[in-house]
Amino acid sequence: MAYQLSASKLQTYHRCPQSYYFRYELGLKSAAFFGSAALGTALHQALAQIYQDWSYTEPLPKIDWIRYCWHQHSGSLSPPQTAEGEEILENYYHKFIADEPALRRPLAVEGKIKGRLQVANLEFAISGRYDRIDYLESGLELIDYKSTKEVKLPLPDEIDLQIGLYYLALEQRYKQSLQQMSLLYLRTGEKFSFDATPKHKQLVESTIGELAFKLRTDELWSATPGEHCSSCTYSRYCAAIQEHPEPLPENAKPPRRMQLSLNL
Ligand code: SF4
Image (cartoon, rainbow, N blue to C red):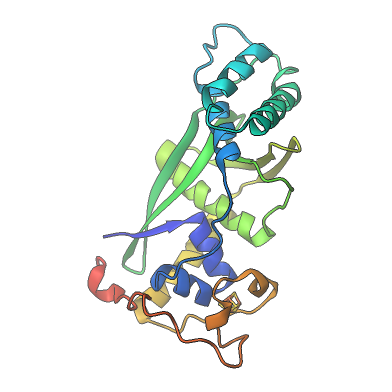
């Protein structure tokens, strides 16, 4: 069975191999999943419909199309959330659609991209979600909508890993190169684009290579303390920052022996 990898798993590993080990190898729950994402989910669904269901027989939709799509997905929201979402999408329309000559038909919306990679005799299944994939002149643009209240860009290393993983997966799936990845913050209407190059793919391959080595050899998952420790769910168990770390909870999974379970 292939070992499952995603951009967020790789980013966790890159930040601190020990926190990766706690989370993904021992299965300790992270507190990072919080809050109601209902408004964000509805915005993502409405945007998917705006691009997917538009007839493309006319060049540009009117704002009524945006409102129609929003009302298809906002039924379970509170009245203030519904109003807020509508305003966000109207702003999106004026900023990213209204002045264009035509709405560009994307290659795909709201989906999951998968790929495979063989490293050190271990097979990795890589996957990632995308909100939209557009055609650019000489490649593809992957667009990731963000519905957070504040613009908080990931660290450059984390962006590079995310780009590299999508580069690899898109190349395998569509035989086309990722040219650009864009993070589009819906609440502020800001779009941040990052160029993608084969170097990003190489970075991911070498990071997965390191991970494969650890999985194969049971090498120590070293702790790399830093600013990120302040938001680490596992800090109480961490000998790198606690003089007397707590013992791991009883529900921690026993460390797996990859040598036995993977295709060697
Ligand atoms: S507290 Fe810091 S060093 Fe320890 S596991 Fe978490 S991120 Fe790693």
